[in-house]
Amino acid sequence: MRVVVITKEATDYARSVTEYMRDFYHQTGRELTVMNPETPEGVSFCRAYDILEFPTIVALSDEGQLLTQWRGLPLPTISEVSYYG
Image (cartoon, rainbow, N blue to C red; front, top):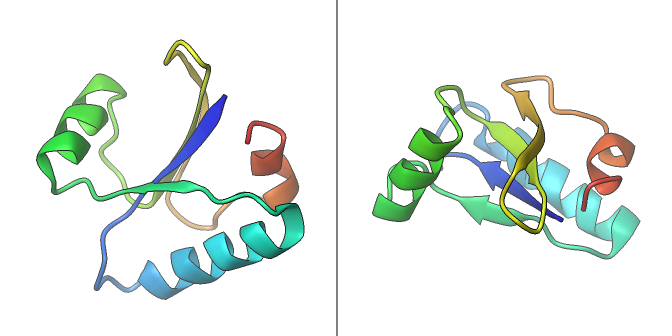
């Protein structure tokens, strides 16, 4: 499984996402994959999983199947995400 955070830099929520990812790492020892939705890879990813709101956190199976997602603020608890990460 993998967890991907889709977020844009220089937004009003960017600091919250950065702090969340830092706290996630300190509590779990694992880093989350970050993707910018404005890159070619990010655009394709967002189309594939129908992501229109940012920040969005998605949990994917090893085969790429969407397991769950959290859209917008507030961000989910670290324990919710760590289950998938």
